[in-house]
Length: 248
Ligand code: IPE
Ligand code: IPE
Ligand code: MG
Image (tube, rainbow, N blue to C red; front, side):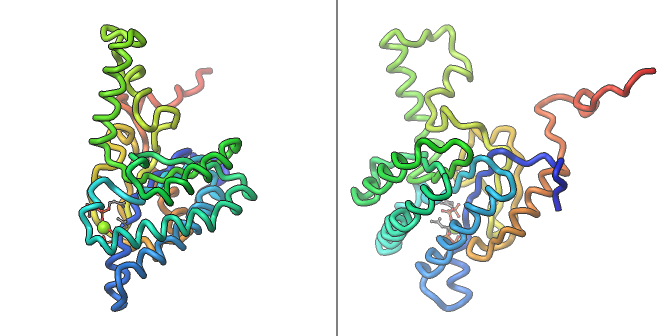
């Protein structure tokens, strides 16, 4: 377990995977797995805060997930709307700021309405933020950012010669968010699936075989403890990062 002095990742991002397999193992329809997955979202949202995390980003629907059977996509959208309606009071009571990343304007109108409402009614909270990645994909994010950046250059608001990561990254969906320190993927798959490619450039990765509906606070605590045993060097050497020994 982590000690009080432990270094807690400020931003944890999770690729929630394995709902379908969880259901299949039980002979249930895939949507049952998604329903249980929503329960885990609820648990993990508050578990992360209890453990000292300041921002939690959950990958809930990718740009590519539209390619799933229509009834599954429809059920996921229904579940999302239901979840948002149900959680709003809890977010307000427990001071959870809610926001999204992704092309939310392509989601069903009912979902968009709930997203706007939840975002608006929680925008004053500052201690803890839940971010849902919805209709998200790093590639479309990059295209959207490049377009917005080009428009800003054309309008004279940015100078092409001054381009840097610091200026360009302001056009990503995540402009005002810290980069993820820790990215967790459940279900044993070891891939990124188009999630926060640029932002996770220096994140630590943890892959766990646990299926998302089975993921618990203890699993999250274990991931954080694992994160704590790692040395993040950001291109430097280990020696550079260690404080110089006190000289006599
Ligand atoms: C993750 O679970 C939820 C979404 C991607 C929406 P999956 O539905 O991908 O579950 P598996 O990978 O089929 O088990
Ligand atoms: C990634 O999971 C997307 C989300 C968790 C929302 P997928 O299950 O869609 O990813 P692939 O297709 O297995 O890579
Ligand atoms: Mg999957």
